[in-house]
Length: 486
Ligand code: ARG
Image (cartoon, rainbow, N blue to C red; front, side, top):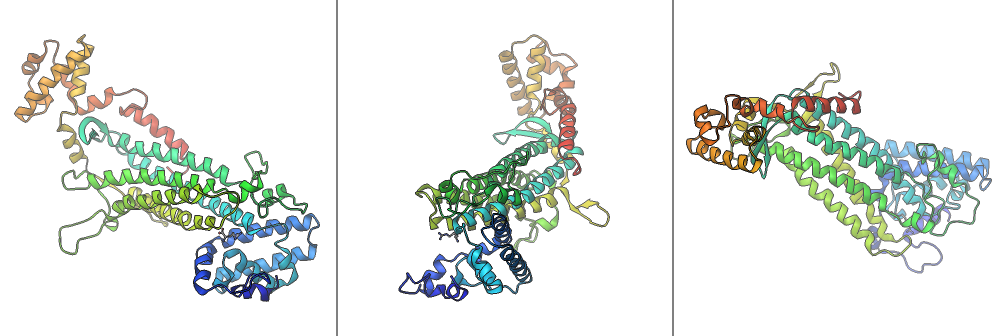
């Protein structure tokens, strides 16, 4: 197709077409206004393809030189904003190819030998997503590090642990925050697994059935870094599947949705914790907004929006699953609809992670390396809350069991004690010894050790429990995993 013909695509694709596309159909079918963000990957893929075509003697060494020169100039034009994107040229691929031909002539027209936009776009999206995943994994690690830094200072800070949002047993704030570090560590692991399946090469599959040219697909895979840990090239091994598969995008979005769900749960806690009735924490003013009518308000907009944006990422996952479910092999234009959900998932997740790194851990002053303005913790309010709601009732039952009382009887005894304490408006630890002994003769003066919050915490020393000794061991493990960040 000559450059003039490509430019005239708005009129017709080729001699085959007898009428031009309407303006509306052109807009409806074009993707250039969103897929142009793939430009770098598109050029990277084209360079790898052209290099291989030359190495295989399919195009000349001169063609390869011309293609490199042209694509370099195009990259500069796009970066500097002078590149003219044309709706009539439909997508990022045709825009770049047309400009290349304009710049270097016939060599530009040879670039597409043995290639189709079907394997080209699948390659571009994979290359682009691979880089984005690397950035997201780095942010996931930063957020874990921010949580670990706060946790480090609060191994002995006690707050009520909840089940059913009812006071259950005391836990340390460090323990609570490390629960989120566990979630994010799994997210990191999951993203890296997804990355392995993203990092496979469709190029060489051409339109759907492979191609008649002697392509060296492994060479292209190596050039593009699509290799495994041992440096083995990773190819998509069925051409029909290669051009139509979007599992990698779905898997990525599923992993992203789960990260958002984790952040949404954390957001919900931050929102509850900073409400007046809890008063456990404060987040810096720059993450809150006021009310236009109520002068006293500071609203937790950032965590609320994170919770809200989770809905949209979950929606993108549904969109992609639904996009695929009815498609016969191989490529269908439906697949062009994979991009906006995928792009928005990446953007939403990236911004959310960035903002949470600052909100939890504080902003880093690049001059001093010091952080300020992270989460502020009100230990007194947390401890006071842990003293309400009989958080150590289980400890009293366990105490009786250790004195030989069967657990079910102990449970019953403590329930009676809680009822009396509750009627008097006092905690179990505030009932005098003779009073407690009325509930069970096995109770002795050492009972007050287990009724204290500290005693309760220290006693939960099973692996993964809230006892400071266990929490310190977990902190140590995370510090090692996150080497260089904490
Ligand atoms: N813009 C298209 C997409 O995003 C590129 C592939 C077009 N292929 C085709 N046969 N029309 O999927």
